[in-house]
Length: 422
Ligand code: AMP
Ligand code: GLY
Image (tube, rainbow, N blue to C red; front, side, top):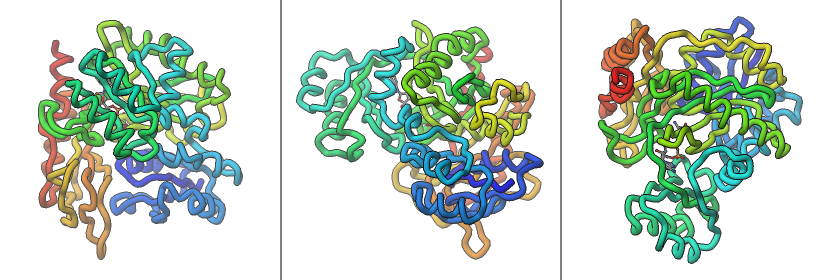
């Protein structure tokens, strides 16, 4: 089968490497792909948001199945466009992708269907938002309604920070139209857990849980990033909590989307906080997480293509989705300075005998040499029988992957280890 994967980051590289294990896959194309993905797929260079280009390419090249991985094309309706020309897809259609595309939609959905989440107010008028902030409990959380490259959320520790965030969204329009509506919500506390799931609108099949490390610095300090590393499974996510999440969050979300006429098919990502009052939804994503995917898919033992096809067809209940009873750790190597200013163009050396998987995010090929081209450059993932083993191996192997100005957190998995050891 000829597969097209839309996207060009570490997540897409992990999806492609996993799909390559399927005996039925003959060729994989990526749109756009990147310099590292080029080792595993044909990179088309077509932009992930170029829906005309993607649809035309898929038709001309007789693509049998497409996987749309990033949020932007999903929210823009890439799946609707591909299906309209007869190409089966993995990913939600536009009507369902709104679950991530609009925080106002997702908050209102949770309220309507009694799904646990932070209390909130919605504003489309800045003066009213500022008025509300005069008496709102602090800390508080300000969220731009639409997609904002993961930067639309401000956890405000003071009233001034909250006011600044509201003004940035609604006056300075730093997120464009995404910030013309905002959500101001209750500040929650507790460990965070990422649960990616497959859902076809009939069942929800959770993947192994994971833990992201969003802040740039060791000890969770500094600005938020796209994610500096992950471990799976997440030790906070016990079998008992998993059962509760299925009953109180996962199935109610699937039923709510069905009831709204927005059946969700694809990867539904639950960003959860395990608060003293039980698990609550921090955010929904309509796609695989990055870098969660880089620890989740290496633990998948079943055939990813078969699962993705079943998700699209609605036969997930009859399909095996099995994860190894092991642990995984992904350490992201970034360009020093990320998420602020950084330099690129440095050659990357990856030893042939590396005992880990490398998922490339921000690198390009120049005259056959792989060079850094982005903030997050690549992720090194190792698996082990214990969390300790996975972490130690990931760091030992990451140290063998070199480029100038490389930066990584030194404590990926440390919090998970502590939680596990009590
Ligand atoms: P997001 O961009 O939606 O993933 O949010 C970024 C981060 O902000 C989350 O991972 C949480 O750590 C934090 N956050 C979002 N909403 C809340 C909330 N209601 N209470 C506390 N922290 C939050
Ligand atoms: N790692 C968080 C996300 O993919 O949104």
